[in-house]
Amino acid sequence: MRSIKTFFLSLLLFGVMGQAQAQTQTGDSLFSPPFDFPIVFSGNFGEIRANHFHGGLDFKTGGTTGKPVHALRNGYISRIRVTHGSGYVLNVTYDNGYTTICRHLEAFMGDIARRVRDLQYAQESWEVDITPAPEEYPVCTGQVIAISGNTGYSFGPHLHLDVLRTQTEEYVDPMPFFRGKVKDHTPPRALGFMLFPQAGKGVVCGKQERQSFPLRPSKPVTAWGEIGVGIRAYDHMEGAHNRYGVHTVILEVDSQEVFRSIVDRFFYQENRYINSWTQGQYMKSFIEPGNRLRMLHASNGNRGLVTIDQERSYRFVYTLEDAFGNRSQVSFTIHGKRMDIPQVDHREKYIFRWNQANYLQEPGLSLLLPRGVLYDDVYLNYQMKGEKDGISYTYQLHDERVALHKPCGMRIGLRHRPVADSTKYYVARLNSRGRKVCVGGFYRKGWMEVRIGELGTYTVAVDTVPPVLTPVNPASWGRRGRIVFRARDKETGIRSYRGTIDGQYALFGKPNSINGNLVCVLDPERVKRGQKHLLELTVTDGCGNQTTVRREFVW
Image (tube, rainbow, N blue to C red):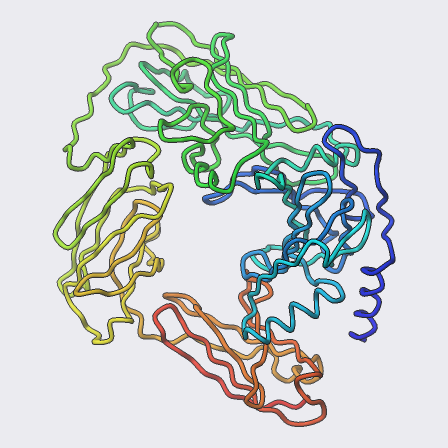
C-alpha cells in the first residue's frame, strides 16, 4: 500500500498539477493558495509567543494530515530540513523576490523524500539539512510539493507558512498575498488595559506597581506622573473560533496620537524584543529604552509614555485594526490625582542599567551582562538562600522573570559534591511553582558555568537517574511496520537517542515533539521481512545517564 501511495505522490510532483491556478499578478505579485480548498487560519502573523513572534500563517487542514501542499508560483526548492522543532520543513524561493518556508509537513515528495532518507541513514541522524542547487528542484504554480502534517513542535494538523524577502531574509506578513481568497469582516476586540507607573516617576491608584483593569473599571482609575499603557486585544475571523494577533494598534490621549504599532515585518534577530514589547498577553504602547523593534513607533517625544500632571480626566482611545482594514475603537478615562511619588531607594549594586555592562559578584556567584542585553533598568530583588546540605546556594537574581536579549554567562560555586562524576551536575532555574528546570551548564574547577537567557532564580542540582524508555503497543510492531517508544526524563530531558536492528543502524526519530515518542518506520530495503529481529535502543539524558532496551520482534 505504501509503495502505491509513494508512486501516486511522485506522479503528482513530476507533472500532475493541483487545482490551484496562477492568479493575475498585481502589486507585490500575489501568490496562489497552498491548498485547493477554502482557506481558514488557526494563527496569523506576529502573534505573541514565548520569546518570539509567530512568523507566518497557520493554515487549517480540517483536523487531518496528508493534504497536498501546492507551490504558490514558479520557483525552486531552496532548502530541505528535518528538525525536532519544525518537523519536515521545505523552503521554496519564488521568482517574485520572496521565499516561503513550509513547516510541520508530514512528508516530502519523490526524489526529495528518498534523498532525505538516504542522508538520515548516512549521517545516522533524524535531523538533516540540505541546500540543493536552484536547478535541482524547479517548481511551477500549483505543483504539489509536499504533504501537510503534524510534525515537530505542533499541537495539531496544520501548515505553517512563512514568507521572507529573499534578498534580506526579512519576515513579512503573508496575509496580503491571500487577501482575495479570505473573507474577513470582523474587527479586533479589546479585553482590558494595563498601566505601568515608571519607577520613581509615576504612581497608579496609590501604588508603584503595574496593574491591569477591565475596559469599564468599577471605580475610577487614578494616576500621577509618568505612566505607560498596554492593551490586551485579539483579532477574530469568520469561520473560526481562534484568536489572532492584532495588526495595528494606535493609542491617542486627548485626541493626540502617542503610539502606534504595525505588526507587518521583522528580522529573525528582532524576535526577543517581544519580551520588551509585551507583558504576558498585554501589548505595551510605549517603547522601553533598549527596545529596537522597528514595528513600534512613538510620536510624543517620550517613547509613548504619558505624563499625568493635571488634576483632570485624561481620555485614552485605542484604535485596533486587522490586515483587512477592519477597525474598532475602545476608550477609557484616567483621572489625574495629585499623589506622592516615592523615590527609588535601592542599593546601586543591585541596579542593572540598560545602557551599560553590569556585573554582579556574590559569594559563590558571578554574573556578567554585557551592554545591550537589557531593555530597561532593573532593580534587582536579590536574595541568596541555602540549605545545610545543598549542592550550592540558591540565587534569586530577581523575583520575577526578566528576559535578556542575548544569553549571558553565569557561574555558581558548588558547596558540596555528593557525586564524584562532575558531568552529573547541572544548573537549574526555579519556575513560579518552585520546580527545577534544567538550563544546562558544565563543571570547571569547583564552579558550574552556564549561559542564561533571563534573570530569575537559579541553583545547582544533580541528575544520576537514567531516562525511562517504555515500548508502546509492541504486539503491533510487526503488523504495522512501525516501532514506537515513549522516552521520558524528569530532570535534564532526553539529549540523544540511537537505535539498531540486528546490529545495523535503525532510523528512529521524534516526529511530534509534543508527545515526544521515538518512532522507527521499518524499511524493507534495510530490514528483511518474515523473520525475527533484535532491536536495541539507547537514550541519553542531559547529564549522560543512559537507558538501553533490547527486544525481539517479528516482521
